[in-house]
Length: 336
Image 1 (cartoon, helix red, strand yellow):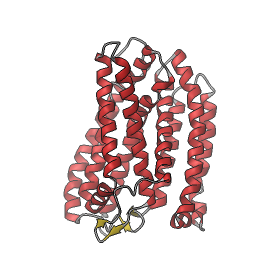
Image 2 (cartoon, helix red, strand yellow):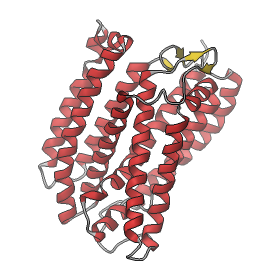
Image 3 (cartoon, helix red, strand yellow):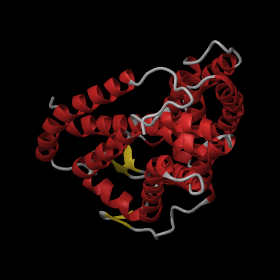
Image 4 (tube, helix red, strand yellow):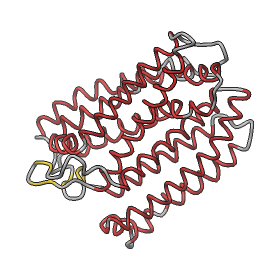
């Protein structure tokens, strides 16, 4: 039995996507949380908590996109064609967020409010469109032969817009719990209280999507609610409930600073796992599997050599960066 290169590449893409969601999630979440405080010094602390490491987060987005292009060219072609508008808007949001991130530190007091708004708007736009993309993937793509058979606005639906809103809430919770870990005093207290409200909002979002998805897609309902699948997949919602209760308890304990962020990562992972369970083994739902969309084995094997060289380097750089800049961020302390 040979090595299944398509499955290996699928795992690489899933890993890169999850790393991006985790690392850029709290970064974008900090921008989304800007309206939570009007204090300029607090906003500086919020931004400086990710300033040394934020610009490396998009590495995972690039890796995932490049892997999809090389290993599953059919999936790449269909997704780019179907999601041209939201993906373009996502890039615009990321660019605005990145420019505003740097420029707000150099701006005069008169111009800083503009860059604060640009940072907020870019973060919300990028996050919302990422959620729309996720919702569209769940809905699926009409494909005729090897080309996308839908229209340019097929991605626009109540479900995808709700998914966009849901991801804004999820990233905001990531940002709030990150700041509980990285800040002190009044800012930390404010974020701790805000995180509790965001946790309730996220649970509501999860509940709505968990009901909406199987009602709209019988295949997903069969995946989750038929026997024996129900018994095997039941731990996912059970763990969501248990982690949420643990999260609520940790947010009520002033001494608990790192745990809320770790538990939020757990909730994000469970949500991501639920998405994977719902669409597996399709990479272009509802009909094209990852093996049908795969590139020739020779191409996948050649690229895998490069991936196995570069991914460990990215991981070492990423974890070393976060290790070097660990600890609290103080008022007046920064990297710009």
